[in-house]
Length: 402
View (cartoon, helix red, strand yellow):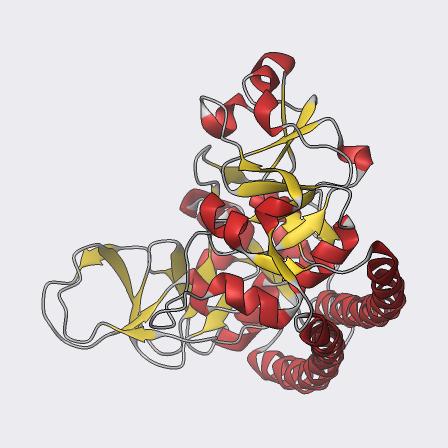
């Protein structure tokens, strides 16, 4: 591990394997006992908290698992999850993406190790030593041969852990309050949309097919993600479509030849895009012209309106909670829809009101939406500042500055 910094008197750099054993042996569970089963999805990023866990319910577990014991430190060794670390509070089994460490008694405190594995210093060095193309991960060889930990006496470790836990509890409480403010802002905007369109629903309704010139989805180019380019024509996927607007993260690109095969789903300025399959079904936005030319894949539908309706009016209507519920749930049995078909969209009814009234509605909702987004942006900024503060405190702690 490179760039080791100077430590206070009484501290020393120790190889990780001199302070903890790595329990990386996998086993297949063949009995039918109940086990606490932990996967990466059960460990919260950065906090070291357990979100949830499952019981095997007496079912035989056929896939390989790692057995862990109370007091072990469970570490997410895959690249996207290096900040998922949890000190086990009970015995159980874990998926093979998790690597358990057992700190050596009277040498290393479990929570001290957990905190260290979440420091920027450790994660940044670990990121330089990732291997594997399909599922990049930290190797056991790297952990055994190169990783070192700044180690004070055991009592000092416990003091630092207690101080970090107390500080982080207060910071996490503040982060939770800011998140609640964001949720309340979303809830307020949702209630306004419900109220506005609840009144308009009493007016004339028409099926979408009567006021659209196009409703249709695309496809993924042959070869899937391997065929995507680093630049070219945008291929809009469900991850780009959000109710609050278009997001560029994960935006794919295709070349002219690939785009020609998708000419029937060419995106035009002011098209309304709606996710029609998957976990994000019914998310909706209007694409900005800066991302054109563009095509959509099979998970996104283009809704192109005639001159009788404003795209923003339809967008606000489709993202209002009560209308979204109509799209998400079938009328029989209350089952959640996994997909919205073209015929469902064509027959879906929307308010048909004069353009002047639509524009007044949009202007009113735009003002409220802008204020709501400002509140959310401020709360998000404060949350990020608190998260940065946590990271700074953590790094200082392992430099002996606490």
